[in-house]
Image 1: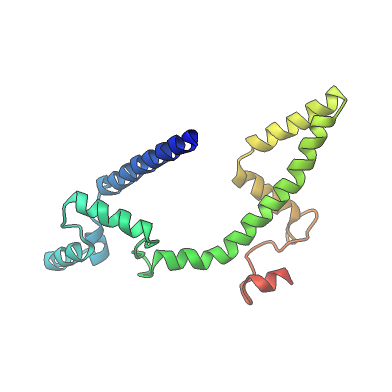
Image 2: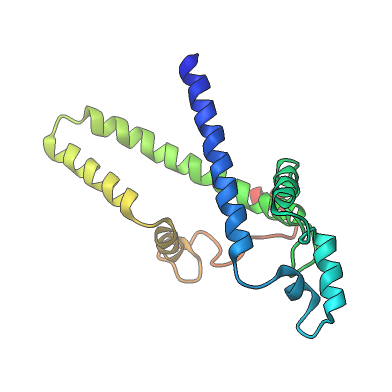
Length: 180
């Protein structure tokens, strides 16, 4: 139990340190968020009003406390580009992202566990070496590059096997239509 408490304290300290580094990095970046949001030729009064509205005229400690409080409540702010809640935009994308994550994990476990067991139980030294080599190559290939190669292999338009659409994610009926 002591080990768990110690790890939780270290984890909390690491999160606190990371949050300070991220907050400081956001404040050190060149440019002013209020100036960008107001526009290039905005009068200084408008920029000052926007800075006050965003809380950028407050002390850094107060800004940090507000930022952490909003993060803990799931409020990631408003997008400068769209003017919409970032939490809402992330939620919209989650309906596509989560099924892809789950499918990827199922495929990885469905292949990895049996192959790992086979590699462990293989009597031949050559077979164990082959499994080990495949595992190292699989771990060394960047996920983006490997994903692109799999798209090229399995997509209808360009692939050798051609069982999946070559672009996009069907959105007409949401994720349920994809499962049909």
